Image 1 (cartoon, rainbow, N blue to C red):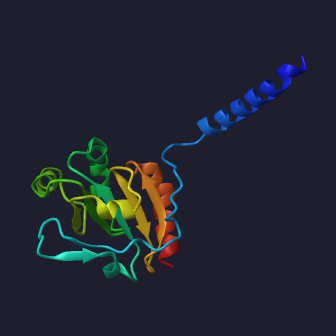
Image 2 (tube, rainbow, N blue to C red):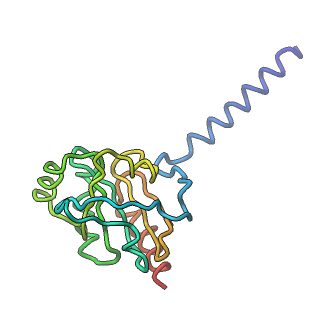
Image 3 (spheres, one colour):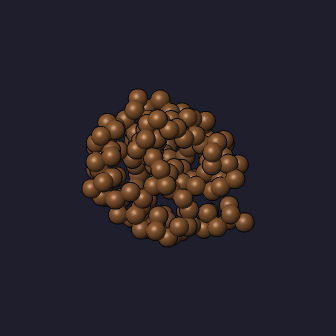
Length: 174
């Protein structure tokens, strides 16, 4: 009988860890970048590749960096909401076009509308690696000092916008 006690205890511990893991939302993957300075970058602008944009240019402003791509199905679903959020002017939204062909991205924005103050192009995904991008869409709320305060993996939903992003933007703008 005692030879079954240890395997039974190990099995029960494993079941407890599995049950706890199943209760977590996969969109709430903690980012090691939260409360750390946003990685520096200087990328060419999507619509005018002769011009560049860097995160340093946003010092002193709270802003949202949205990772998107024309090949991304979830980005297409999120896009109408981004257009609505941009019209509200609650926070400036900057686009981060990820591993996409420039002409496809420009065409996509022309077809669906452009919610971004401007978009940069990360053709090879190297800057995306610095930001810990898992895939598109993802969004980063960055404060006045250039510190990442929130990361959304997957589309920004109305619930996330209303209950998380907007209150955080208000606090950061105080």
